[in-house]
Image 1 (tube, rainbow, N blue to C red):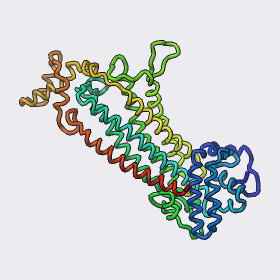
Image 2 (cartoon, one colour):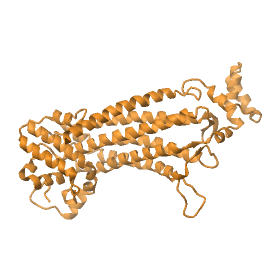
Image 3 (cartoon, rainbow, N blue to C red):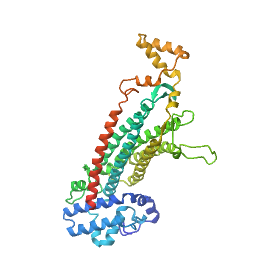
Length: 445
């Protein structure tokens, strides 16, 4: 099998196995975008008079045929998807197939594949994240009057509401969306034409390729294209890590609050699994795995950052190993968001259990503040209530939570702000997805 770097000798098989690693397996996920990127590159080569119109037509036809060919395979001896595609073209078209790599290195080639794949995945992640946010919004809306204990230090603290609980995670995830969109913007730069990091001595049109592929702009400095490897991947994974941290915290709280001891929430039986020895068990395994996968995501961030740091300027083979954590991190985040949305869609809030848990001492702070309203200094009010905790009586919990009217409190949740943000982000996302899809479809037409 011909290597793109062929020098007239065969590499030692153990060296080949070690250096290729599992790239040839991972690259199956990138095949569509390797083909799309190659079509855009061929269009540019035709404009630069490096390819004749009839050659462009033949190359485009065979590139599209690759995606229709169920027998197309990336083998270990191919090393990567780029080699497999070029070898296929050469087999079908002879010397014409060898022209496709003109003015291109595997360095910028793999980057355009991963950037396009990352764009597609991030858009899907944003879609599912907004669905999850809509689910949390509905849970908050439906539970404005559902009083429940608020906790600090895992001890009862002050009256809260289920709406405040769900709204807190909603707003946090909307903040995470800002991070994802920032990562998307950094990723949305076209690397093609940078070659191995030092450009080429041909009159190529990098802007054309960028426009054809639907990138926001050309990634300008050809050396920075290579120096940004690992950096942009880590930014993407870091944004997803923040989502996973929130999902982990949400999962952990749902686990605790759905135990019989709390019984604030109920998870449908179909979302639980059983024990092989204890017949009565209905375990929240799905939530435990979300919690654990947050740690896996953190490991992906660390892998990429540690691989990329302190490297000499320009491309180094170390960067090959940033691909796997990036691809796996994107898939992990998408699956975790989808599964949390599914769990929340069936979650039941046990309103009576939440209300019953509001024991008299939880109203202590409100009792002290009541004395303050009548003119007593705060420190005296605090001491007086603290010395008479046994005399505290329960208040009407719903009246209590709805009476707190300042911005963001239980009686003024500001859910309409989050609802507006969700609608705006959905509309913006639809436009971006349509634009990207149209660009890819046009190349494939």
